[in-house]
Image 1: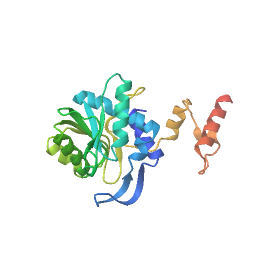
Image 2: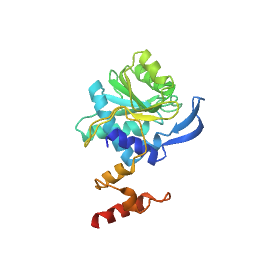
Image 3: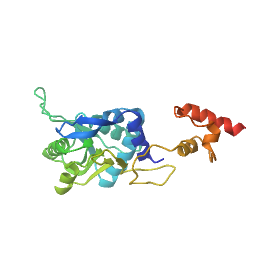
Length: 245
C-alpha cells in the first residue's frame, strides 16, 4: 500500500470523508464532505501529510509554507516538523481571516521573511477562495508563491482558476462530484506508486495478504460458510486457525 492509499483509507477510518447531503462553506451542495482536520490532527495523518508535502516543496524550491486558518494550521505545522526531522528548515506561517484588531494588527502570523519563496496549502480546494486569500496575504508581504497544495481537490472550479492565473497547483487526493476519490501524490516504501487509483474497499484476499496469509485457496471453506454478519476479527481468527490445520 502506498502512503497516498494509506492516507485515503485513514480518511475513511477517521470519518474525515463522509457521504450524504451536505452544504459547503461556499454554499454549494455536495453528496460528500471532507473534514480535513480529522485527518491532519490525527497522529498518523499528520505524519503522512508532512511526508507527502515536503518533497513537493523541495522540488518547487519553497522556503516557507503557510495557509489560511484554520484548515492549514495543523498541515503547516506537520510539514515544518517533518522538514526539521529531514535536516532541512521550512518554517510555517498562518494567514488570519482578518488582520488583528489589537497589538501588532498582523494578518500573517509566523516567521515569514519578506522575499521568501513560499508554498500555500489548505486541507480542501473547492472554489479556491481561502487559498486566494492566503496567496494575496503572502504576496502583500513581498513573497513569491511558487506552489499551491491541497489535501483534497474537489474539482469545483478552484484548482482550475488557480492554474488559469498561473499558479502551480497540486493535491494529494482528488475527487469527482459523486465523491469518488483517487490518490494524486503518493510515495511508497513497499509498492510502486499508482497515481490514478480510485479508492475501493479492500477485498478479502487483500486483507488476508496484509496479514501474511497467502495464498488462501478457499476462504469460504476456511471460514465455514462465510456468514453475512462475519466481522474482520472473526475472519482473521479463522484464517489463522487454517494455517495450523
